[in-house]
Length: 155
View 1 (tube, one colour):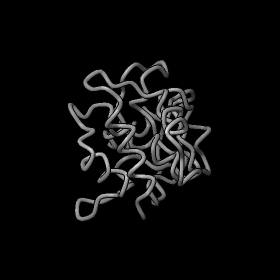
View 2: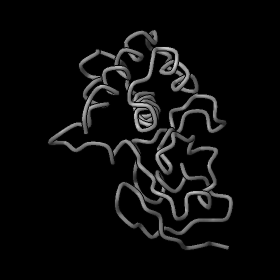
View 3: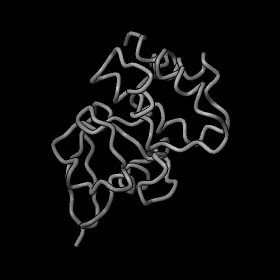
View 4: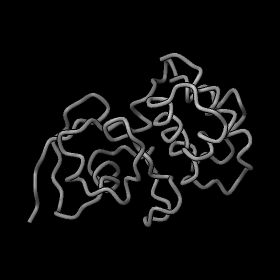
């Protein structure tokens, strides 16, 4: 039986309809058109679907949408704007940490989740924060540098 609820997504209240057991990823992509959140493995192995839920990085493919009710959800689309990128987004460009781009929204969201709780992480904390995110195109050196730069940036 379909259910209706309001979600707070990127600072806006959005009414959605979903089936019980639907994931946050399904609702974000299929019902709200927020396709920056990528579907990679649908098993929680790749991190491409990472979003912020109450300022914590979570895997949207494993998060039942019911767990998001009453909490602020931030997707990659909610970080910056076309006119002004968020510092974490800009850091990925400046560090040259982007190749194909498929994993990058999830990497940025993991980095931003870290920044919101630890604005001065060391390299080990950065590595731990992105440990659940896979990139098949590049080594992680530039990604780690980008997260470090992004944590130094101001909103």
